[in-house]
Structure formats: structure tokens, C-alpha cells
Image (cartoon, rainbow, N blue to C red; front, side):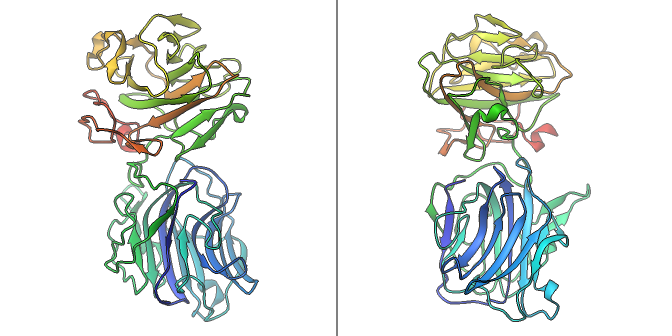
Length: 441
């Protein structure tokens, strides 16, 4: 998260010449952001960060003398997870062997900068000074915006990426959940199976959450869940937060196009929950649903004008589709949770308000489509939100299965036969979360 960072100060220095840092990350934005940092100030620090262009940047700065390694590769994907490994061993005779950066199992050898540390040079990493993950060490700045998982730090050994990941039968780089490594005195393993900062290495080198709220998420390197897509943001109308699961529209935007999920659906049955959490508009022109056409919409705004727009509106409870507004269900307002069940096998969509399906809908009715609204099959759909009143702002919090609305966990998880994701209300039988595993059921 963009305001959250972790902190630990080792009681004594470890090996300041040789160490390894490994983490899986999912970015929410492409901007500056610290992954690992230690030091006493801007002139004395060691850090691994993202630059604003998406490159990875390692720096060891001693009394304002800089040693830098920066990748040409730009990591700009805000939907998938990356595996990043930093291996440092300044005892190496060959300078290019002293700092190595790996992305998804491959060493980065195309570098924008490569001023390597001197042989046997000490770093501030592994010194008895404050170490932070997700922020600069000398001030609360350079905050990382996104998610992290399976963070390993190794004191005294420079491992390559194969210690922490491996290629599966399909050629995909995947996580090793319990790598065989020697952690050393100051080594640690945190965020293993959730949001615990308790060290799992056996060293008891626990971290603390020094700022913000560290939430758990079902989204992980082995199963990527949908979020709102920050790359589809017409006229920069919206701001994204909480791992792109919260979106707020602007009260100055002139065209409120739908804000959509990163993952799409073309067959199968999917379920999502959207909490309408805030507005400056007493008319409550919130719209929650799905759409198919997400690019080049022109004037087809506000999740109602296209034949493949399907929305449930808050102000009057109407169903919106292809410029038509028809009576459908109860009104809803801030604090209400709207469930969307999309059946692309039979061609129907259903909406519930706080667990009660509107229009006497039954998402499990299959081909009969009891209480459902017809949708065309054979097309790609995305979960979507929008509003019609550009003079006011609206905030939506999505639960695509991560188990949270913003930073608040669901009150009491409903049943979910697919076992994928955590939702506030029962997931209809046969439906699943919109995730990579859900898409492959």
C-alpha cells in the first residue's frame, strides 16, 4: 500500500559485503518506490528502488560517493506479479559480479548505469541501522505502491534467482514457497502466507509495521486476482488506491467512462462485490455492472449507452442497457454492497444489494435465467463502475475475492464452493472469483 512500510533495526552488524534480497511484487502504479533501504541519511545509504520510468535502481552511497546499477528493463505491468532478486557480493574480483539483479529468474545484463562498488566495499544493508521495506530509511518517503509477498533476506550469501523460484512445465517462472537457503545472523523471511511480519526463517528477526495498514490479500504470485485498471482512466478522471481496489471519480471530469477490471471474462460464471463507499452527490447516480467495449468508446459514457453495458443504478434502482433505463430493484446508497453475478455460459447477469438478489433473481437457475437480465455471449466482459454526474465525486471499493473493502476485512465471509477468494456474501454455486485460477477452472 502507498502509505505502508515495514521497519527493523538489527542489534548488531552482519555481513555488509555479501547478502541477497528476494521479493515478489505487484505494482499499483509506475512511480518511484523503495523496496529495501538502510542507512543514516541521503549521503550514507544503500537502497533498492523503482525509478519513475519503471526501471530498478540499486545504489550504495558512502559520504556522497555513489555506486549505481540501473536496469534498462522497465517494469510497468500493474496487473501481474514480478519476482525480483538482488544479489550483492563485493568480495568478487570481477566488478560486474558484485551486484546482480534478476527479474523473473533472468539476470539483467542490459544496464542503463553500471558503476559497481569497489572490491570489499561495505554497504549499509546489514549494518546495525534502521532497515525499511517500502520506504526510504532516512525519511518517510519513496513509499512503494503495491503488494509484496515472500520477502527473503540472506546475510552472508549471494544467491541467484533459482534459489527462490523455478520454471514450471509450461515455462512460467513460479515461486518456491520454502526455499533451501542459509539465512545467516540477520536473515529473515516475512510475508510468507499473508500479512505477517513475524520472521519465518527461525531467526526471530521480526519486522514492525511502522506506518500505514498492512492488509492481507488473496492476490498472490500463484493466483492473480482482478483489480481496477489504472491504465484505463479516461481524462485522468479517477484516482486509484489500496492496491487499485479502491477508485474515486473526480468532480471535474467531463466524461465519466466506465472504470473496469484488469481481467476480462468470455465464458464461465463469475462473482464480484462492489461497495459504494462515498459520494458528494445526494442523488446517488452510482452505476455498478459490466461492460464489453472498454476502448474507443467516444461519447458512450457512464456505463449505459452501449448494447453490452449492463448496470444497476443507485438513485432509482433501475437497470441500464443500450440507452434504456428500466425498473429493476431497490435503490442503494453509500455503505451498501452490490454483488454482481455474471453467467456467460447461459447469458445472464444478476445483481444483489447486501445479499438480496434484485428482481427475484436466481443466479443458479441456469438456462431459465430467473430474474436475470440477458447478456450477449461470445464477447469479453469486464466488471465496471461509473457515474453520470460529473459535478460530483464517487468512491467504490471492489472485492474481487481479496477479502477486503479498502483496508477493512469482510465482516463474515460467505460460503464459496470454488474455494477461490473471500467474499462478504455467499458465492452462488458454480460461480468463482475473477482471477487467473478462476479463469482456468
